[in-house]
Length: 113
Image (tube, rainbow, N blue to C red):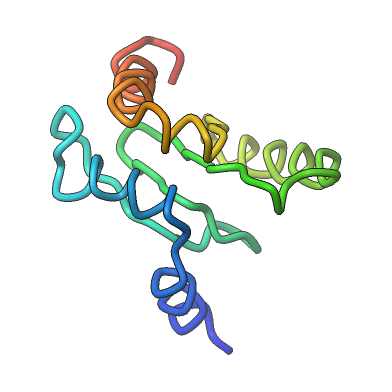
C-alpha cells in the first residue's frame, strides 16, 4: 500500500479523540495555523502536523501503553527533521478540548519552535 492510500485509510479510521481534535484545528481554526492529519514524515504517519510551525501533535491512547521506547525513538527521529513533537493523551482531548486547543496554541505562539 502506498503512503497516500495508507494516509486515507488512517483518516477514515480516526479515533474519537482524533475527530475531536481535528474539529478544533481544521481549516485554520486554531490561531490561523494550518494543520494536516495523518501525514507521512520519513517512515511514520503523524497524527497532526503544522508544517509552518514545525509542530507535530501526537495523540496517545491505550495503544501506546507499553510502547514508550518506540514512541521515544519515533519522537527523536521526527526531531531530527526539525519538528517539535507534542504528545497529548486522548483522555485530555475528550475531557477538555478547549484546554487542549489552548495548550497547542500556546506552543505554536511560543518561541519553543
